[in-house]
Length: 355
Image (tube, rainbow, N blue to C red; front, side, top):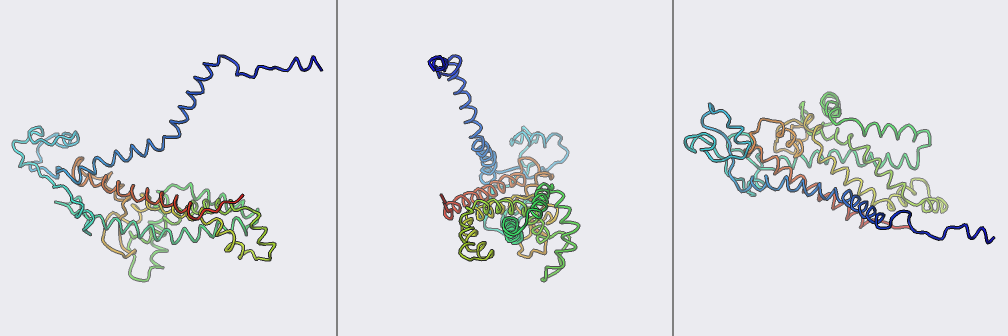
């Protein structure tokens, strides 16, 4: 016994030099802190990249055209931020056409959006209405279907059905959005949207076709997040409800739904944020004209699709039309950021804590 006790090591300090180990620990902590704060750093960078051009959009004049098209190198000079007519090679400033700053009243108080033509119209409401209508259409499809799929997979489906349906949802979530866009253009619009919209004829491009397809695109996300929220409900509550004689439907609506409501609400808001930011599907299915209309059967644009359309167009850099990309982008960022903050408040408001 004495020999055994003497063989047990009594020095429990880390092997190696203590100062060296401490330096390594501090280095590891610093690396982990940088990784943990990367989201904040990236968000801050996005905000700064949007704020400066947006400020110039509302406060400074911008080049909208040139009186003489024979000058060479004008676009290159404009890209470098030069605004002096002498530096651009013009004899006088009258050869440059300027666009005046856009006021907040014009931006939020007009329903005409034609930033690329002439003096331009910069009323953002057609983009806001198009975004809202397509998001609403997508939510009417994705939210009930997603919650229903989640309840079916967690409470009604057998192991075999779950093994089949779950991978199918995951495959659907991995389909590229451009494929969804062509699916909307060549199948959803001609075969579904035209048959279910009773008010007037649905064109080749329509908000209805885009909304239906965006709803199908966010459906796997909605179903997965809702399934996770339902699975987080303690099994003891479910078994207790069954022990009291409740049916499966009563357990789903009276026990599981209230207990998992915070997670389901968060899933809804996250899915809607994804729908608001969708670009490719809306660009292919809804068209490229921002029309002031509440008719889903007509062509329309969302904020995200306008950014995608104008960003690859022929807008001269540093022009008013080009600066609208950043103004609309900042507005879109504020809306999605507000939705994410709302989801956090909803989770705190309806969260049920179980021991």
